[in-house]
Length: 125
Image 1: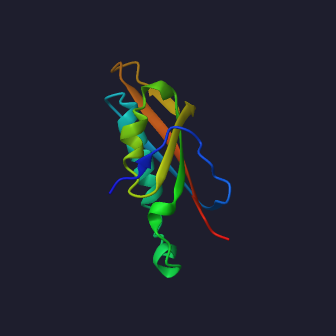
Image 2: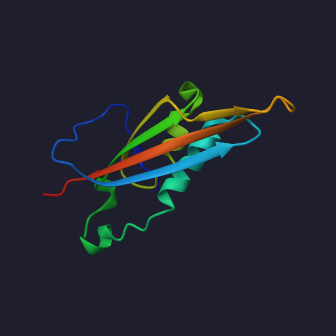
């Protein structure tokens, strides 16, 4: 089940920041910013095993996830498609200028690199 995509910052009062994950993704040949952003999210979430949900008997759907993406052309990222990569919680996606493009003068291709920062908050007292 994919996370529910939210369009504003929401009311994160009462929520405690408990996780920060970072990842990098690329599209070497197609200049596809969405593909690179999805890979950045997958890179971030595959570096952890969040056992705290079962250990503390917390429903992962109660997570609020701030999905931050940095790309040379942030407007080229399909935020809904990238947010759907996160399996649980309420996702608040946004994209800003950043990342890196590397152009190859010989082939005329540009490699796209996108960074992801994923902040997870839970209602913990």
